[in-house]
Amino acid sequence: MTRILIVDDEPQILRALRINLQARHYDVISAADGTQAIAAVEAEHPDVVVLDLGLPDLDGVQVIRALRAWTPVPVIVLSGRRSSTDKIDALDAGADDYVTKPFNIDELLARLRAVTRRHGPTGAPAQVRIGPYTIDLATHDARRDDGERQHLTRTEWRLLELLVHNPGRLIGHRELLQHVWGPTYVNEVHYLRQFVAQLRRKLEDDPARPRHLLTEPGMGYRFQP
Image 1 (tube, rainbow, N blue to C red):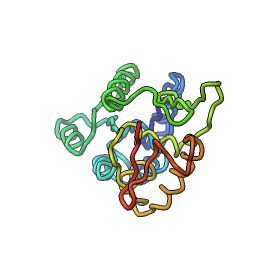
Image 2 (image 1 turned 90 degrees about the vertical axis):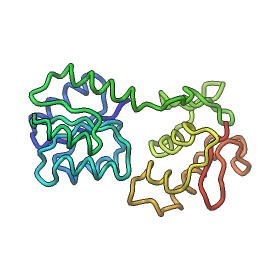
Image 3 (image 1 turned 135 degrees about the vertical axis):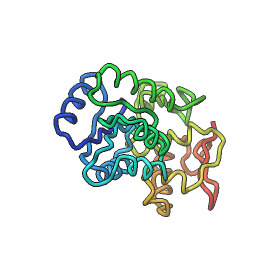
Image 4 (image 1 turned 135 degrees about the horizontal axis):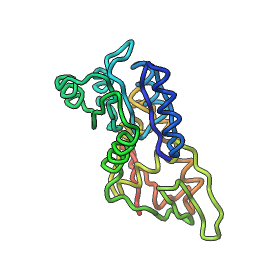
C-alpha cells in the first residue's frame, strides 16, 4: 500500500485529502507544519509527500531542500501560489511536480500515480529467493514452498528492499542507515547488525553461514541472489 504524507496547515484540506486518498486505498499520514513534515518523513518513510508551500514555521521550499539533503522521496507541491517564480523555486529545490489550489482530486491522483511510477524501483525483481523463502517485494510477502509465511517488520522490509533492489552491490553502512532510519542515525551501525541478524534468522537456511545477506566487514552489506 502506497503511503502518502500530506503537509498542510489547513485542517479542511487535510481532512478532504485523507478521505479521498483512503477511499482509494492509500495509507495517509499528515503534518501541519514543516518541522513535523521533516520528522514524519524520517519516522514514517512515506512513498510520496504532498506539500503546501505556505506553512506556519518553515517555507515549503525550505522543507524540500531539507529533505533533498538526505532523501529522494517524491514531493508533489500542492499550493495556492500561482506565480511562475514560486513554481520554479519549488522545482529547482527538488520538487517533482506542482499542483495549484483549488485543485481537482482526479488530477492530483493522476499526478500521484505518475510520480510513483517514475520513482518505482527500476529493474528490481518482483520476487527473489532467500533460503527456503520466496520474497515478493510488491506485496511484502515471504512464503515457503509449503505456504508457511514469515512475518517481517516494516523496518526489516525497508532494509531488505534496498539490498534486493541492488543485487550484488555493496551498500555502505551510511546509505543503509540513512535510507531506513533517516539522517540522524548514520552512525548507529549496531542497528544494522541487529536487523541483518534478524533477517538472517528468519530467512537464511543457515544464519551462521548466510548465502544471500552478506557482510562486507567494516564497509556494509550485500545481497547475493
